[in-house]
Image 1 (tube, rainbow, N blue to C red):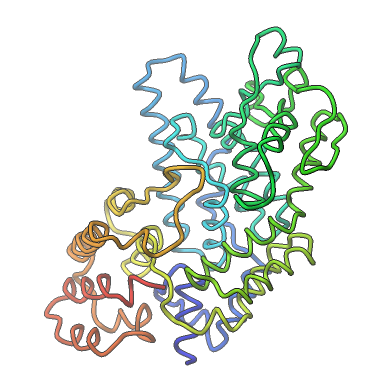
Image 2 (cartoon, rainbow, N blue to C red; image 1 turned 90 degrees about the horizontal axis):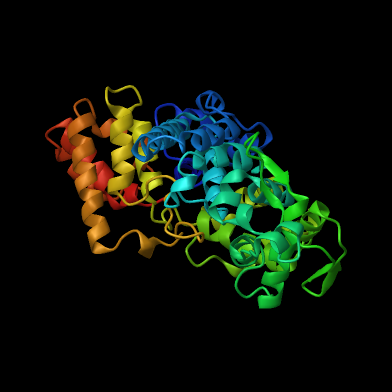
Amino acid sequence: MAREHLHIALCRFGMGAGSGDAAAAGSDPRGWLLGQLVAPHRPPALAALPPGSSLLLAALAARTGKDEQRKGQDRLVYRAEATTRCRAGAASPTPLIERLVRFWSNHFTVSVLRPTVLPLAGAFEREAIRPHVTGRFLDLLRAAVRHPAMLTYLDNAQSIGPNSSAGRRRGKGLNENLARELLELHTLGVDGGYGQDDVENLARILTGWSIDPASGTFRFAPRLHEPGGKTLLDRAIPEGGEDEGEAALAQLAAHPATARVVATKLARHFVADEPPPALVAALAATFLDTGGDLAALARLLVTRNEAWLDPLPKVRSPDDLVIAALKVTGQNEAGLDQRLFRSLGILGQAPWTAPSPAGWPDRGDAWIAPEAMMRRLEWARAVSQASGRRFTAALAEPMIGAVAGPALRRALGNAGTGAEALFLTLASREFQRR
């Protein structure tokens, strides 16, 4: 059981098992995870990337040039962000933080399928998500909503109060996209007790939350803001400009329905596709009792027995697969960045390309349909041919040793080459799940 607990710590709470990871976790995997919440690592390669404000200003300036040239520049920025993120996920000494970053980035999805988001998605994760994953939910919510990537993706930068000075002059009106997704996806959930009036009123509250074209950062534009008091979930919000939005976010962040949404999604991601009701209830209660303390929720997940009972309950997403493979095959091969980028695309989860604001699914059946499994096997074969020359069954031990069944062990023992041993490992059920 101790070896299974080590595997769970490395592969379910972490990003996979590479060289030295088992020694780092030692004989106290839970303590190793809890320590990461106290001192999160900030990957230097990510910290060295340009701020989102400068990327946005460069993108705005490039729009005066040729369209293909601008698109090419945006794609270069996106690719650099994506590959740096992947490498950082594999190398981080605090892999639980990397998993939390990905979880919350998916919760507050911005997608580069909207072309204007292409140069901003990586900066959004670095600036709005990463600094707050062990802080308060309200601070994370606020940072996500105010970031130019979210304001662009869900059109709030173009939302104008019909009775504002700009609205009366231009004859334009509200855009409800951000308000609707805030209620349905980010906080209360589809069954959270709100109605269309709440969507419209929240959209009015958020008018004026926009982007400063001179600095590339958030700004409140009073001339776009709908005047007058509003009501949200039967609570009056007096006229107050930008403060109306702040009050609305605080109201939503403290709502019991938000606690249930967050608790359910966390339990589903870390424990099982059908999360245990008792764990969901405990997480929701902790959310409310602590004022949305995300580190407290993570600590509860790590310490609850439900998280340590089944070593392989979750199917690995493509992002999980690629990073786990990278951890064992190494990060210094020629042409690696291109292969990382292509791998994520082939497997169907290129970074920040979720098909809708709902983000990527977190259930196994979304990733293991027959066609998807064929792509996984083809990918495993290609990785094995490129990186398997020096691979041995002994190197597979940290990745799958605690959970490897007899059939896989026999197959690895009979593998004739390193490439064959690596393929058997990557294609195995033990590696495809976490």
